Image (tube, rainbow, N blue to C red; front, side, top):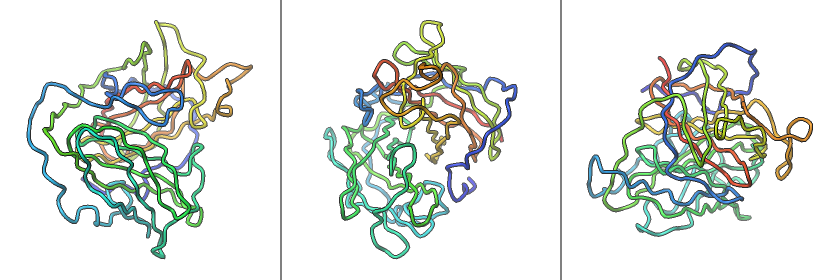
Length: 314
């Protein structure tokens, strides 16, 4: 697997309208379901599918989190910055506060971050089989210690990502550490590709023309009962949030929306209407193969999460 670029968060650009072909997407809901109105966490993330394999989960291999990388999201260090944490495993069946720190090139905790999609830092958790998706917004103490409230996680090997931009460096970064949840692992196979996915009565469809390493437009359409949805509510400064993880290595890519929404809590849009039914994203996935996409959108005061498998050509 080749290295990803220094930052998996692509530069923002706008693209001229193009006839996009249907991209191969995997249907299936995110096992997380939906969260409450605040959207800060998504309970019910357990994936108790029929096991394809069962085993007692071993501890993390030593030294893995200390390996510096090129900023592809699969290392705890990049660009002189490092993500440190005190724990690498949790008690099964228990929620826990996960505390971590971002240190800068001088070795000191970073406390000044640029705001990106209304937050200074975004925190993601995903299991090795790309189930159990979490998108959390941790809080930072005065000393630079971040705390993310992890819910109960299913047994297995997890990777925890922090995406941020230090105000001093102005460089988009994504760092991660691994976490082991002991217990019997019930792995869930990646859903087969399909054209759309459903969640909570909504249908999400995607049109795109993507080749690995090349930027291109990706359009998401949201419908309910066959009727296009036009009253999507603002979420994190836009009308939808899209995150992708690469099958096999869990590399993360954040796909940037092309259109900003009105202020949180308002209806936004044109002439008092909300967002939708189509939402445009700037997409640049650096590796071919299957990517698991998690689309989050808010409607009716509730955050909904749809999961789709995207196959990217080489």
